[in-house]
Length: 254
Image (cartoon, rainbow, N blue to C red; front, side, top):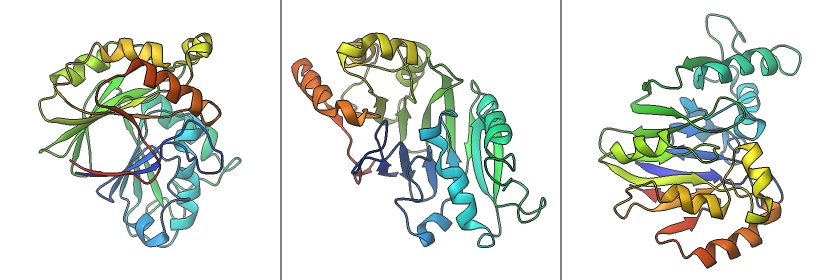
């Protein structure tokens, strides 16, 4: 399994793009940096997008992608979204007001994209991958998940505050090769992190204590660009083993 980091920040500034991971060139995890990162020929190769939740920084390139691909694909791009996220996309994005309804363009029988709802507590297939979603702690319906190609698996926390079910699911996975975990705010903004469903270095340390990692690396993403320097300092003080901050352009083979 090849993982390419197109975006890994919790906001946008020059040099920072929002969450988007590309798996084997075919599947995108979240859609915060697709159209700004990939040329058209690589965008055409993406068959599936799996969304963790409906917040703008995670879905923003779904409508932009749909406009680019119209008339260029025989099959729609499948956008896998939890029940609530799928509803938000239909009612608030592809509503012919904020954006044209590309789930019906150029033809309802052959649209550019297909929104495929999933139960946030039941495994599903996205192309050749098995996706096991787990509800996590965020103001809107949000999931973390374990993604497997049948040989190896990776875990992605999604946007979340302190939780339990996701870590239990991670601990069950025998072929786990990497764990991608959100980190957003410094400890001084703990109150904001708690109310908005995000982690700080303090709560991250507590969450990782729930994981039987057995040497599996933890790759941190979603750092708020305005707080990166402070977050780096606080993480250095903690000295957590095999924990590193992702950067845009990182590539991994698991």
